[in-house]
Length: 190
Image (tube, rainbow, N blue to C red):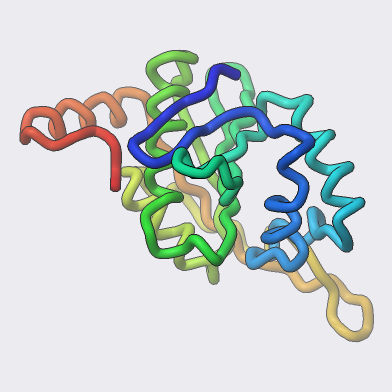
């Protein structure tokens, strides 16, 4: 992918040298949907960073000032629809980096890559991601009851989670962008 720059971030392909920064947040994933990506040690992180570097679907989010990897986005195309998501290092939470990165990705997907529709799955207990979806202008389309299991209980039985689906159409993004520009506001979220 071509790198995308925002005011404070660079979105780019992963590099094998991202291993230590990747390990910093995947040694103990915060969201249950990322438990399968848990990294046990730096060697596992090196393998994962090398694997991710071969994919345009997984996007490293780095601080422009230092080059530090602070999280990642994904964008998996399904014809003219794209499944999107994000995972950020908790040490960088609360500064608006996820909003800034996701906004830049959405802009690229809709205006450069020609996506018609974006959607995201969010567990019903992941309030931070639900709020991010709302800030991006996504609307909740549904709730899937006991949709997926990422872990098991003490007896090995799956623990199923409720999952919300959020989505946005290109015309909704364009309307939102034109109204923001009409108010003199920048299109990049802080």
